[in-house]
Image (cartoon, rainbow, N blue to C red; front, side):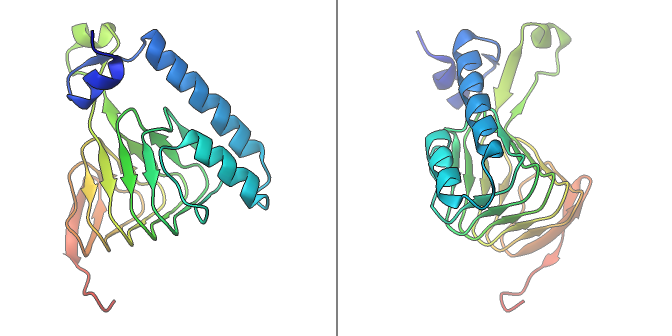
Length: 188
């Protein structure tokens, strides 16, 4: 029998309220609570909690409080990352964040959604798709990135955007829904 983790990888509806999923969420909640209670000037202590919580992280990563996630082990963060206050990552599926990414306050990365059918929603079935954020990306305040989105290298997502589709590399994009506005020349 397949685990909920294996079913999620196939992008078919899975039971979001299974005992397996509940235990994963409980672990993540305990570790994020611990992380958020450590003073921001105790970088080594914070890093140790992130190492335990996340799938992959470098020592120079900075995530301000209050940080929240569903799972933790599905989050992989590159070097030189800065996540500002109130970063929420619903990492039911994999979230890959490249090197030198800046995320402003109140950003949400959401890899999971519910079926449109009310009958299916009542069964607590969920559907997930990964999120990929390339290198040197800047995500403005209050941005929401939905399942299955890839943000290309060197792109900028303007504040308040709802990102429903992937964004090409070297692109300025903003809006709700987020749209590609113009290329960003490599020398900017």
